[in-house]
Length: 505
Ligand code: MSP
Image 1: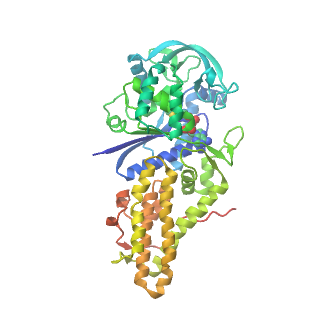
Image 2: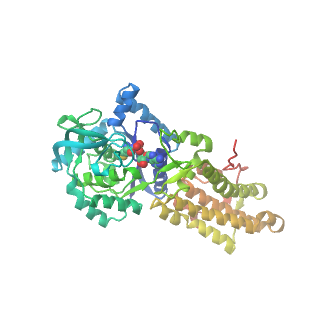
Image 3: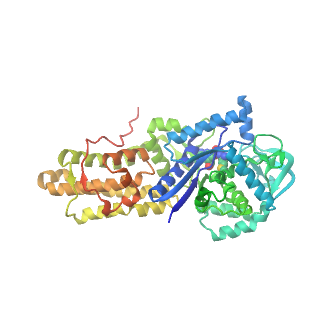
């Protein structure tokens, strides 16, 4: 049976250039998409840009250009970032595209036809920076809980009957304990719902940059209703019979930052219920990065530019670091020292040196070696551990535990390093060349497995490694991590270090 997987990033606001937070979410989704493809899934991986709303309109006004020109310029930054990070997205959606206007308006129609929209007027607080409405009781010292300024808004508005979904959402989450992760976010969402859901204002009249409400063009759709609909647009909605819709709406994972859980785990499922559509299987909310211990903010001037990171440390190291350093779901701190430690210890020492030692010995002493007839208990123990990687790593990735997945891989790398020290193949060269070959074979075969498993995390470096080992392209998915597909011969060119040490300039 065909296995399908739909993975989405939030769509990014085009009011500014991308920073590390955007790179992080997209990267996490990329690892999941690549992992699923390598384990036989048909994947749709969507990212894109959120281009409407007051925030973008105001930024464009400041820049003195039209909102669309502004959005086009900043959307291009996000598209370029995806390329630079070697992101394997299958689609990039812009909410200013005609396909999206059509889908968002169709969703509106559906909610209206099903009796969940009514016209009224809104009087309350709004934060342009968060693009969110807040209750008086939520404000902290006159600001949004996020610290963003709020303004008083009074205008005619359409409302969505969110209050009608309080009980249905509670019932749903009582049965779907894994629908929101990590658990702390699940609990947060539940207590928010239990606190009572008020109807939600879903249109604005005091500015124009948005998708018009069908049949009442004085109103534009609230940017979050517009934005959330992107997940449906990209799979062909409103055509629920389209192949993409049929294939992918059944298995959806939304990865988001912790600040936008409410939109994805309260409003979005309520809209979907109202439209008679399935709910996503999973909403995973990751934590936030700080920079050398400080909150990242434009006013502080400590925003981390992903391009600068890649220039300084290289793409593979950046991808590895972001997913290894901090348990996904928790907040984490970016620091130069921590980055260097990961590069020099995990990548250069543990994995890079292992490869270099093993490959140079093969190259110098026994190139063309074949799979040995007999293996010792130590050889078999190492290989068997390597062959368990698809199961152990897959289990962690299925719950978005990237850091644990990498820990599992580094356990095997650690075992391989202990094995090479204990077996000392360089000493065997003089005493027992057959044994030396068996040891080196065992190591190269272990490295093959590690290389296959690490592909989602560091696709460029692993491409180079697997090419170096002459692994045919069609033998690179995870089913090949078994004894049945073990290397038959090992013929190597002269090796070059895979992960050079980072030396301070
Ligand atoms: N446009 C909305 C999402 C709409 S989805 C239907 C939005 N965009 S955003 O550009 O402001 O933020 C996108 C993502 O970046 C969010 O998931 C947010 O959590 C993440 N990050 C922003 N700053 C961050 C850090 N400092 N660290 C980690 N992620 C952070 O919200």
